[in-house]
Length: 148
Image (cartoon, rainbow, N blue to C red):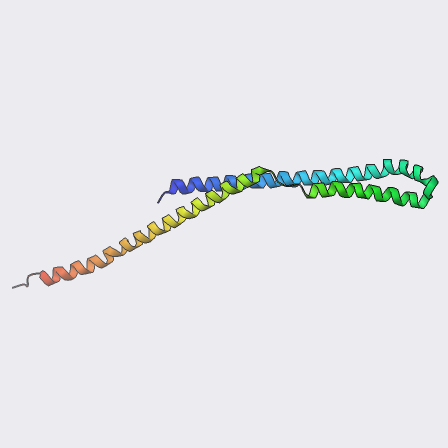
């Protein structure tokens, strides 16, 4: 039974889970940042370019259709930035952290199995005194000299 090895593997497992959580948190923060940026770009783009485009299209399309064209262009830009944010993948660090985590988990499981097999062997040896004492008592009584 190697308790030091088990404790080391549990520490590695805890650390890798912490690293994985930090990587996921950074990934979510990056996605939220990109979505916020997409919203900012969409609103600023719709306002600034919309005003300019509206004024340019108003003469040829009329006020209503110029406003529709400007609004649709702003929404398309916001959709493109949102799609880029949604397709953002976590870094390679996450794959490495998952591999180390799995290795530590496998090592902990192996240590637990080894410990449980050692305990079961110890339990079988612990039953031996319970059997030996009655057998020795029986043999001593059998070979004891009868009192005269």
